[in-house]
Length: 191
Image (cartoon, rainbow, N blue to C red; front, top):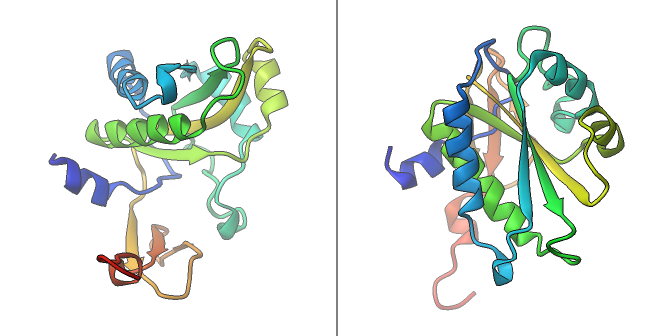
């Protein structure tokens, strides 16, 4: 898929099929993340893949999903992601990490995932203390975020909206995401 079209198609997915993602695909996704820009090339990010069923089940309750949907955006039984990528900051490599590295790396993960037919949800509302304990993450790692992955069981689409920012579910349970129209954000040579 052409990159521009991939970017236009990429949307958050919160409901997944019960299918395992192959390890070689996960390696390619992490490889795309590690090749993202890094301030001063410090390369302080690392990625913990969690795909063992007993671990994914332990991780799931410590994630908060889709605040605007008030519980209706949380995957139900059988709709949970089959993989989590825990995005870690190695504090031994950088005491003051530039968080733009995280953004670039995670966007690469989201786009690479879509290129392999996967849906993804980047989660920042997470119980870091519980995840650290469940996954035995050493203290020199800071848990930044979690990316939930799997084969999608829903679709998500964009609609232009000049006022509303709250995403919602349509009558079929698919996600609708309002975005400001291009004409509101594109300025050419002056404001």
